[in-house]
Length: 366
Ligand code: ATP
View (cartoon, rainbow, N blue to C red):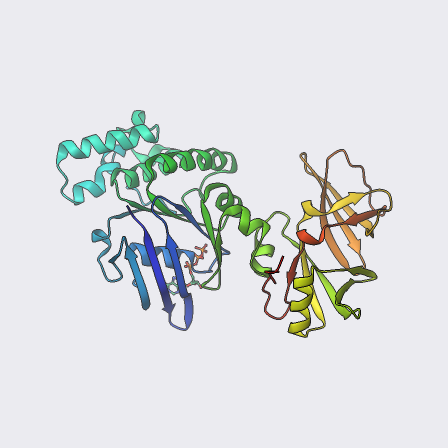
C-alpha cells in the first residue's frame, strides 16, 4: 500500500512561487502524471515528494505517515532523473545495485534484485558493460532498473524519456507503461509532453504557474477540460476558442458567433444570465466539428485557409468571420484553399467558458 497525500503544499524560491497551495491524493498503485509547460512547478512538486527540496508549508504523507520533514533516504521512494544520473565508469551491475549497496543491503539480496530488475528491463546482457559506451535508450533502461531494484512502493520519474529520439520514445513509452502496471508501484511521472501524459497516466494533473488546474483521467481532461488553459494546452491541435456575444431573446439566452445564433443548454443559459457579462467563450475540439461541402442546417459558412494532409486525417484551417478554426476531416475529404465549406457542431460538444475567470461552466441541471 502506498497512497500519497499532498496537502496545501507551497514552495517558493525568493519571490517566485514555484508550487502554490497544491493538494492532491495519489492512490495506491496509481500512475499519476504531472503535466504542464516548462517552469510550471512539476519538478519542484516531485522533489518535494522525494524530500529533495522541502516544502515551505503544507503536508506530505505516504500511507498516513507524515513525511513532510523526513530525510529522502527514509521515505521509501525511488526516483528516475531526467539526466539518468548514472555513473558512466561503473558497470551497469554496480549502477543498478548502487542504492542498495549504500543502504548496506546483503550482497546476495543485491544480486537477486539487480538480476530481477535487469530482466524486467531486458538489459541482462549489458550488466558487465559501462554506460559510457551505451546508447541513450540503454542508459535510460539502466536508470529505470536502478530505481526498480530499490523495490520501493513509490516511484518518482522526472521526464525519463525526454533525452530519447522520437521513435525510441514511442517504444519506451509503451514498454514503461506495461512494466509499471505489472509492478504496481505508485508512480508520479513528470512530463511536459501531453501525448506521453495522456497515453501513460491513469490520471493526469495539469499544472500552470505552480497551481494544479485539473486532476482527472486522460479522457476527461482532454474532452472536458476544466478551464480555458487546460483546453488550450491539451490536444494537437489545441481546442478552438470562439467568442460569442450573449443576447436575451425574451424567453432565454442566445449566443451569437458573428452572424450565427446558437442556443446554449437551458442550465448554461441561466448561468450566463446570472454572470451578467456580454460575452462567452465557446471551446470546441477540431474533431468535433462536422465539415461538409454543401450547405447544412445550423451550419456556418467558412472559407478554407490552409489544408494540411496528416495521413490519418486532413487538418484544415478555416476562416469564420474574424476567427480561424482548426477542423479535422477524413483524409478522403477534398478541400482546397479559398473554397467555401460548411461546418457545424453539436451544442453538447461545446465547452461554454466564462471569459472573465476562464472557467468552464457546467450545466448541473441536465
Ligand atoms: P521544466 O519542465 O522546465 O523542468 P518544471 O515545470 O519542472 O519545468 P520547476 O523546475 O519546478 O518547473 O520550476 C518552477 C519554477 O521555480 C520556475 O520558475 C523555476 O525557474 C523556479 N525554480 C526551480 N528551482 C529553482 C531553484 N533551485 N532556485 C530558484 N528558482 C527555481
